Structure formats: C-alpha cells, structure tokens
Length: 293
Ligand SMILES: [Zn+2]
Image (cartoon, rainbow, N blue to C red):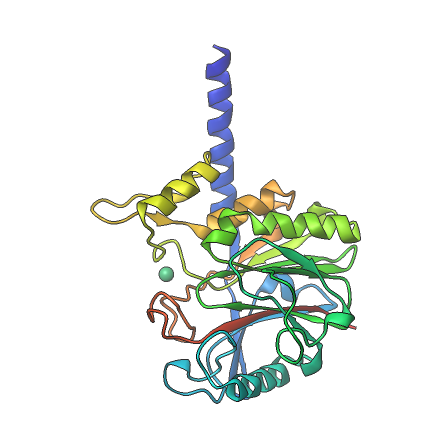
C-alpha cells in the first residue's frame, strides 16, 4: 500500500515536470550587425546590465565548409581567419576583443572561476586548464564557449551579479555540468539558485539527436525518472538533451519559470554549423555572456 502511494507520487512528479517542460518559454531573436548573425534569448535580454548571445555563421572571412564566421580554433583552419572572425564577431556584439576568456572544449564537466587576470586565455594567451564551464563576477571579462551541435548553458544571477556559461554536449549533459555551474556560482559568489535566470542555446534538437543503444542506456540510467529517451518504431532511439538540461537546472534549484530555450536546432538551421549534419566538416559557433561594466 505504502509502495503504491509512493509510486503514485513519483508519477505525479514526472507529470508535473513534463508540464513545466512543455510550458517553458521558447524562442530566440536573430539580428544581423555588419552581416554577423547573433541569436539572443528574450528572457536574458530583459535583464539590464548583462549581455549575451550566440553567433550564426555569416559575416566572416572563412571559406568552403568553414564559411564564413568560423569561431573554432580546434578545426583545421588557418588561425588568422579565425582571429579575424573573432574581431568581426566582437565588433558586432560590442565585446572588447582583449577581454574574452574561452573554455577548452573537452566534453567534460570541469568548471573554472575566472576574472580579469584570465582575459585573453585561449586565443591571445595559453588556454585555461581543461574546462567546459566558466563562472565570474568580473565585468572585465566576457565568457566564451564553442559549439557545433552542443548546448550552451547560460546562467545569470542578477541579485549577486554573477554569471556562468557552459559547453554541454551529450557527455557534459549526462555528467550534469549545468548543475555544477549553478553550484559553483553559489559557492563562489553566494548565488541563490532561485534567483538565477537560465537559458539553453541553439543545439541539436530532440527530433534530430539519434543515438546508439549504449548512449540511450546511459541516459536512462542517469535520469531514471525522466522520459528523455524517445523510442521511435523502426528507428534508433533519440535523446531529448533540452529536457535533460532543464531537469538538471531544476534539480540544482533553478525555478522552472526562470528557464527558457532558444529552441533553434543546429542540424536543421542552415545559418548554423552542425557537426553531425556536416559529418565533422564544419566550423564552430560561439556563445558569449558578460556583465556590463
Ligand atoms: Zn533538429
């Protein structure tokens, strides 16, 4: 009997989460500045004193399958072209060029606290130690993460005035890097998770993210009460990474009404690079987040 009541409660929790996820605010804005496309999230735009966005692939100097605003240093392209793309991206997004700090794109879950002493790391100076997540409360740095299907997680605490940004592919999502960023903001800056406004960037959508049986099993095991593995008759399983993101934000204490999704799929949007669609022959995009001085 007691077990029956517990099972009923669990079902209610699952149902409640699914409703919250379905009702979540979705949709990005896209603007072009000197040809450079920039996606933004309305919920983060409404916050005064912060700036954020996500680059599209137009307005740069790269050619061929990197065309044209490739912002990835890890792909086999002429470094000077990528640097010039960053200059154009910075002018369009009004980011001081010397003040960026970049993640190292490891598909891990390490989160690093940065400040103005780290400005330039990853492009002008040596890279940071291995990390996919960054936190700061310093307005003299702009956090940058690289993407080409993987999610960008944005976090802003307007009360304690601190921010976090992460690169989360399926491995990072599985390892709950989003929850780790929230915990780090709480630890370093006293952020209260219920004050944090969070967003999930352009990335491969639930309809496109096909996985093998082993990856599907890992997600089912890591999120046993979440219906994030979607089984389609006669097809390989799919994983809803956006749902996994939202779930870990809520587990970390972020309020559902403070979470929103860009709702832009990199695999089907021709303006974006997609590692999977282009079978690895592609460039990279940048997510950025900063506190305005
Ligand atoms: Zn898609």
